[in-house]
Length: 427
Image 1: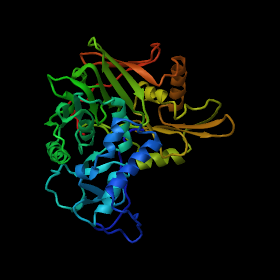
Image 2: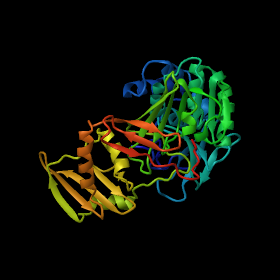
Image 3: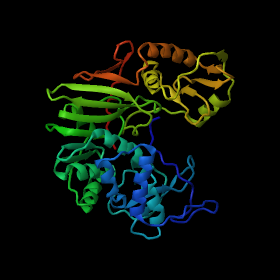
Image 4: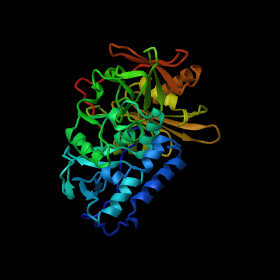
């Protein structure tokens, strides 16, 4: 499931004051202990292994990179939204802010595109959170896959709070690290706060999908999802280098990780790996979601067609199938991961399906709308199994812009959607 970095929070009162019915945890202010506990938790979850990334996290004081962060004080869906900006320099804010920084969830760092430097703590009403530091587990898992090493040239696309750049500087050295973001407020704040840590990478403000023209990098990390691999970034991968970027469709449900590598002879090789979680979509990328009303309809409506089936639906762990379904079936299918059983809707046309167990090796399948989503899924499942049930696909990058994913045997393939015209990338 994509869009991992959402951060719902309990409704609380004015700055630092919980509502009457809200109980906040009693947190001892000890960022060093909190940092050690966070790393231990990531290891237990399997998101982080021994190595240079782990070592860097153990010495990275997140409160220096994110001395201020927002916490939501209104319930989700209530308008206008209320936010409090907590500040590490205020002793009363530290217990709650330490929890935000080290519990592993995403950290909300920017409201309505504001400058990050020179802000005053306090409440904000309405508006949107426009930048956040991604869930730690996702970030460190991808950094591990980058295989960072001393002396490498690293391009960090999507500066955000500067966490990725800080790890890259710690492991590889400052001189080869470039961090890039379209938002000048983010790059300005990151430059100051990274310097407070003793790191001075090059900070660049510009469109992320274009990278740094004329330069080559050993490692390129993109901290937001896109519809395709940016060919400009692929062209900046040095021989022996690697690029990682999450790739998704309009739907947030079944993302992929594109891994692009250039061999020592200069040839590019790429594959698309089905993954459970991904970064949020980049700025300007169109998304579709299931509204609360649509989810309720899928859960409660009897539908226009009900059948008993002996065919088990593809399992949640069949991520290679769901990745293919997202692209091959088209029409924008969205999974309701909050539902107890398999529930999928197509917001564009209002079609939906719901599958519930009805006994040993029996399922009740309910469908509604002009599309028979259940039949589409079962037909594709046959093709996917005949292709060897792949969980990753070869990714063919056409220099002119077209990109195609295909199973190793070639029996299952699809074109990646073109980038939206006028789309701009952001952290």
